[in-house]
Image (tube, rainbow, N blue to C red; front, top):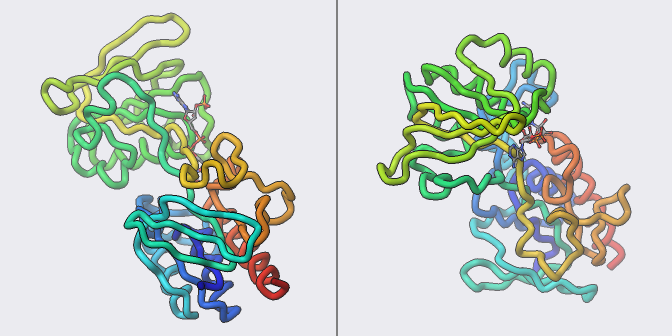
Length: 308
Ligand code: NAP
């Protein structure tokens, strides 16, 4: 049986691993289906402390992995499909390949994934011009018009990033004010390549019959009017959903987020099971807050194991 298994390899998981490994508990990390987490798909991270010049998201996560492994954390590729959780000493994880792992303590740090909109054409054209990651796919669309949906920091960041490649960026937001930070909003509004479509939503992506994105129809939510814009790609950046389906029926969830009844700690409702990062945080969702939560979960797990 493992001492402690960490599920997820984003900032929360790796930070928990660094602390638990330094406590000589030899944690096992189950990497999940995107090793390193969502930050590996980001470009420049400018707000993680200690990097005054910024750092690439991929490099930041590689650094965290190396730091965790240096102290003895072990990384196993794979995804947890379900859990058998009870207050009993052993918690069981069932992996996608059917194998099982027993652990005395768990740190749940599975993160969250991009939300889709369900617009006609969106699903059919996924990876054929519809994308949830400008960093991954933006360079495929050079000197052509593209569209970004959303008004948060992710959408603003993606719109700015896409200006390096696209001839024009249509930024579509359902309200008349961005949700994202002022500094990012100002950068977007000052950029001549970005055309903002306020009060508008994505009504349809064209053209599944051609097996590629050729245009998108927008609907103005105030006037009801629709308009069709030519574009070669639609980047959807409308927030995230926590990766907690595997916990259904095992732990209380609220809108999919793991409930931490004692807000001041990482303890879930089951002794020995701790949670950290975006799967348990619908409010802050920053790399640095996820890392802080990972530290908290590691300290809570270490104390639990000392007393158990
Ligand atoms: P977010 O802040 O939750 O923003 C989601 C955006 O999508 C909002 O503008 C929202 O509109 C819109 N939206 C949601 N559902 C929609 C729907 N069904 N149809 C149309 N629009 C929809 O998510 P995020 O941008 O991914 O950011 C998440 C967190 O990460 C935030 O705390 C953000 O600050 C942070 N972040 C930071 C950076 C950075 O600092 N460099 C970069 C990326 C993300 P409404 O505004 O109307 O709700």
